[in-house]
Image (cartoon, rainbow, N blue to C red; front, side, top):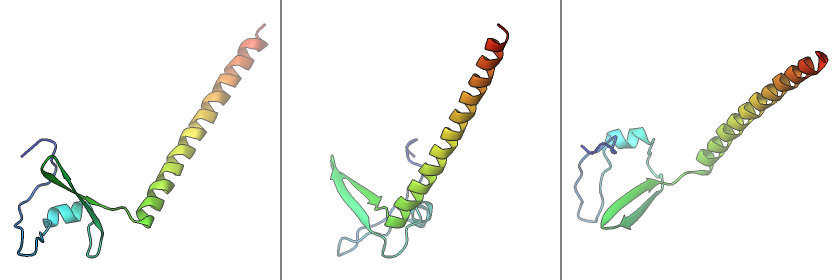
Length: 93
């Protein structure tokens, strides 16, 4: 097994070109019936990617905003600490 591959499985191409994606992989990416997939050919290799839904994108944005808010709060706390330290040093003179 390739070190870069977390999951792999084998499948067979059916008469109409259809394949079944192994269950472990479907479960890992939460692939459900009717989900849309992007299929590309790159250097003679098939690349299959699950297309993100509007809800997926919204969830990613919410998580990003939460992370940004946390960073903003940490930055404000750092500035307050620096401000308090500088006031303390200036007060000593």
